[in-house]
Image 1 (cartoon, rainbow, N blue to C red):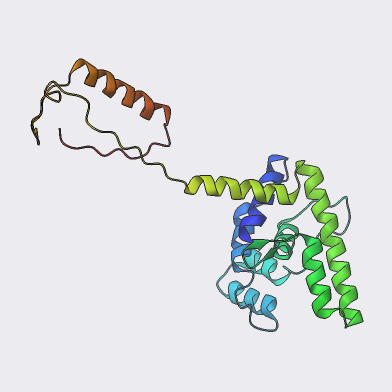
Image 2 (image 1 turned 90 degrees about the vertical axis):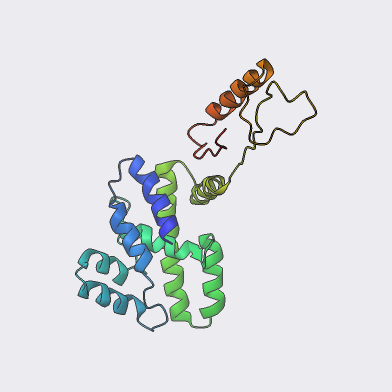
Length: 212
């Protein structure tokens, strides 16, 4: 939830939304502090407020609602928190229509509750559309792009570079730790290795070599 809320917040801030991302992140990380309790939003907010974090507590208390009541009102941290909470199930991204279908399947027999579910999701869909119109990206595309960037950041490449050719390598002898000068071919190999490593800056973060 925190990740999706921040993704949307960053895109909106690029368009001048002026959202407090630190506040948003704090509330998103703590919004389900006591999730297993019946009134988890109010109880979690009370705990947070006891520790002096009133603004975070306010968001946690109301995270199942939206602050935006009309198209003329600006989006708030609460709107993003509530929307992100509805679009994340476990640690997986789900569309609002998917999440609505799950809620109706679970509570649809209660007509009053079903009406509230429809109202809440209709409001969420409106807010989602505003976010997408403002940023020029669908929320699903924002999430997918973040997934790809995170996957790329986890990738590691290891380059193994053997010692360059020295003047004795042509002979059938064991050299061990003997430090010998490079042959002209070895000089060229060392230069090529340096060029390749340089081309990968700044991602080539660690280089290990022998003492030769």
